[in-house]
Length: 355
Image (cartoon, rainbow, N blue to C red):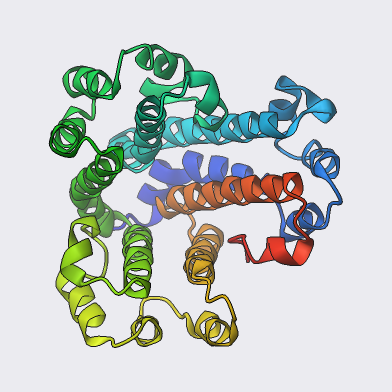
């Protein structure tokens, strides 16, 4: 049950104060708009160096930073803040936050496995590594010294804290020799494991648990929207459906199979309001699906922002901040890429999840 009164203050007083301080260093909408309208990469760096990213940018070259090195700074900043969340979480709830940020450990593992499969070196992916935890940059580099993809997975299946998840991925790889199957198996096993965490969180802070469920819904709906566009049957993509969202697999199947078109399927979605995106899609010549993903991400972001500002002395402040920080870094990566590829500000706005 949610804690109240003096007990809540004694348990979450410190962590809430720390998260509020971290929140104050998130980029404002005004700063993000300035970055969108920056004329070049140098302009973005000049703005970011006046923010919480200053020390990370200076570590990798400061105002003389080149495009790819900004990714190092962004990854470092995310890693530092992920580490802080674990540190400031009350001891009795650290298992919940560790389970949540475990997706970044697995993100690093998937990054290494995919790179190995493609014959790439650690240096080719190092700027995208979230440098914290058991699979930080150093340990990931050592892991990539293994001779091949199967040997990486075999080693992880023995020694990793995620060995059960990796074991499923290894079995998938042995059967198909397809690295995309590895990533799918890792994601599915992770979200199956999140079931017990979500259950605990439902008792502790219902809104936080629902935010995770909606995040899972978004991932499932993105898969199904793409599948509907290509005319696939639900049975052809059912293995990609992640468990523990607010929409169960049976509900998703009924929605999917009863919809005669992609527009009808999107119109049947109730957990997100995609009416504006659907109206724009109907008018669009090239029929791009990205707007639906951005629309869902924006709604999760806005829910996190609302939760962070209204949750006082609760676990919700920690959960909400984790979503907002992740969104901020992902958005900055898109903005940096937009300047490298010389996209205009209007084109850029259509690619970011920020409201």
